[in-house]
Image (cartoon, rainbow, N blue to C red; front, side, top):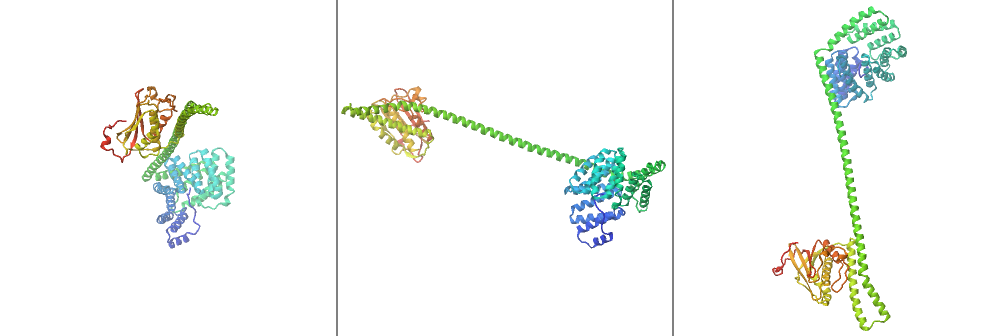
Length: 622
């Protein structure tokens, strides 16, 4: 597992000259990185030197991806080559932190891949979690090399733990990727697949895969160094039972490794393990047993190197970091769930508000419909009452007029009878006219056309005008009709409405006052209102009629002292006009003791009554 990166294309001398002549930090960092990759297989010190140079240049250039790449490669070198896992963890952790800040999934996957190797070496229980994180970030990148490396790692770890069924799908994924991009790595992972098949007892399938791998030997570029090439070719020869060829590759590899200034212990371990597999395949147990002692010694040395005090501290810190990261993810998941719950609660609340609003609107609509139904019923009842009144009170005058015309046409009336009938007919027509005028005004009010337009009006002038209109009728009945209002008495009301109110009240007073009686109009003050008082000495109003006096009812239909007819809507209309002008009306009456109406109107605030006007006028409460 060499990690992400490729071998240099240019010669190292040419790259070193470019490094000296280049002034751009970003370019210098890239050249130093290429030199580090070139020297990695053979010259560890040169590789580390150029990696540190690449890191410094990328830091000065502010190239975060380059910084994460250099740090990851340093961790890779200290883990696989130098065997200093403490420093390896240090650089891997730093690279992971930078990649996390910049959401660099490519280097995050690579860092978690190296941490998985550390977890295997240190037997950490967090290995499955680290593998899942490596897979998660690998799947978020489009880099085929990173994905293949992580899948290959998962396959290798599962093979090491003898979980072949779990290793198989990862191995197949890796083979599929490398077959399209890198034949050298395809053969390496193909050999792992052969091991899985053999472990599962599928020897024929393993042999078929090995032959397929051998057919591609001519395409090998040896891009991953002599160690991997020689070890892979030896393992392939063992699968094909070409034992002499396998031994030749292994011995050449051992000789090459031992001649190095600093032999790679891990390379030696792999060579000895493959030689042991070869001797066991040849049933040469003696030589295999001899090599096993060497393998055990190398493994113990590696374990001591990896289990240094610094490495233990770093591993403990790594475990703590993994635990913290796991808790942070759990907290992030919990926060996401809480956010979703808040959104759900908001949706539920909004739906509840909408439903409640709909219910309120529905209730209001039903209430309005019910109110309109009641109003329609009342209007229908009013219509029925109106037709009853009309049929009763207009039939008689119209029938009299019809009879008079018929008698006149027949010529049966004398001159004296004719004159007398004309006078009677005139009175009847006047009464019908008054009834129709009241009826039309009341009908307008019922149809919603009643609108008050208040203004400052002379109350005394309106009363005087209405008295003049009724004076003839009053004189005919010898009724004393008089007003005690001062000339400058004003009120705030609609002048037309006020005229109709006073006219109806005075007409009723004249109608129900016996001949020789009296009607008086006076006033009093009450805070900001004027109380207009109309008192008569008439027949009074029965107690049972007082309760329905201002409503449309047959009880309110009464005949005057001379059998004057009435519609019964006059006082009902008066009450509606009084309410429209924000005034008030009261009545006091007893049978045969007369009647008093009190009309409370808004005052004209510019008018202040004189002391003489207020004498004898006490203030009453409403």
